[in-house]
Image 1 (cartoon, rainbow, N blue to C red):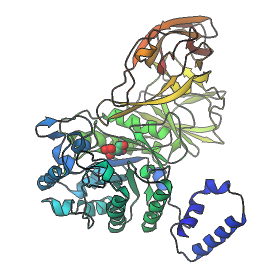
Image 2 (image 1 turned 180 degrees about the vertical axis):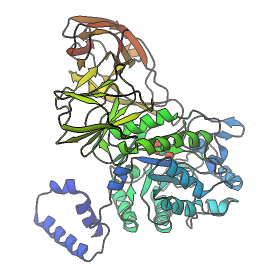
Image 3 (image 1 turned 60 degrees about the vertical axis):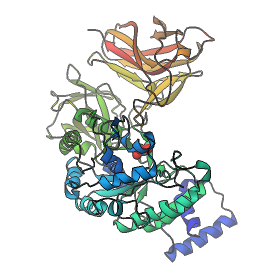
Image 4 (image 1 turned 135 degrees about the horizontal axis):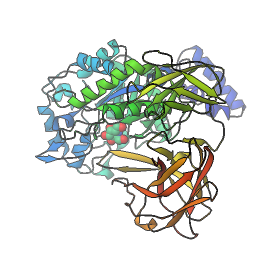
Length: 607
Ligand code: FHN
């Protein structure tokens, strides 16, 4: 019955479509009785997603036996995601278990880690309690392959860390890989030691995965969330049952969508993936800091403070949270560049955090100068590229402005209004990575309402980018996100226009060009061998100007290889006067194959 009630209360959307049959009324009555008796979990207390929505910035920590190896096994360096080293080097479960004997993270200091999380401005921390390698980073009674029993360290770091993090006022959560377990004969994934045909996944769930999750939900105080990963081997019904039983232990803990089968309390996109346009439901983007989740001593490709600050603003402008990962080493030290660069994010958040925490997606879409985030009565302008003349155009501002100020120093900034154009006269940027201005307004701000969203194109910037997602498509044209990788597990995602095969298959961009002048037109695309040498046309302003091109071969599409994008300059268009323009791209002839997968069109002012 508990499951029945849970279903009715949780699946509000499903419930709407249910017709009020007698059966439904009966079960509703029963449910109410159960609710009164407080017999089952959470009907009166849906997990509260609001703290998560407001948090905006989280710290992810991948820490396990792989951290001890640091990407090197038997003298060979592995590139890509370090926590997969057991799989990539096909190390047997017995041999891998030996690594635990050297794992002694004596530098681990829960207080330091918690202070670090606080100082970088994270509002929640999620750490791996058991990754695919099968090693439990906490004191588990279910499996002896754990840090207390199998390593010389002999202590439970999670006891200390969970408390220290909460003491700083942050939410604490566990990552748990619920299906993959390369240590266990019945766990998913290890086919180099164990015969896949003899595996009993349900037994694995029953005997390790679920009991361990119960330990984590019982022994470490209130959890903000449980971050599941890589589901497998279970039906939707089975997954639901497990979720219900776990939720009973901590009704407030949020479960990530990687619990599988479309379930979970909030959505996680793919690794290193941001949706191309805003998403209203609670969601999270997850990024590595270098190119690996687990520590790799020879991976120093850390995202710079500028990249991190802009990534955070970009994710917030689409309504999501950013969780950035660090990979501490086998001694328990956080890599130097993660410390330095993430602390820079913390400093930036101290000044401009009002424009991130507690915000929702930007009501005004991305502009050549940057992105926006919103709060009731406030629109935040994240300026990452200053217009050369200092006049920042915010189109579609259809509410009454009270004042405009710079967020960190609260100094008023001059502004003018012309129709629904807001022009903010901005000073030199205090922080070139991102200086935020706030527009205080009354009334309702709805932004641009037209379906063909007009994009501002201006001579004031070094480049104007027309992203694929903003094209209006006709015929077989469609928008698709392609996935590829540089290193193993280092995923990249790019949204592209594809399907432009015949002359009637087109992508149209509606532009508002603010000054006269010339623009170089650059197509950024990937093109496999099968699509090379296709002819296409860019029509500018209703056929007045046409640029012809022939596609150039770049690379084949493969999710485990890099996909290469070329910036193909195809000509120059001239603009006599400011105004509304169309830019249309389509094949020159019928009967070919798709032109390419086009990421964007760049309009580069010719100066
Ligand atoms: O395979 C894992 C990977 O090691 C890492 O933990 C990431 C984090 O999102 N999740 C899986 C891949 O999606």
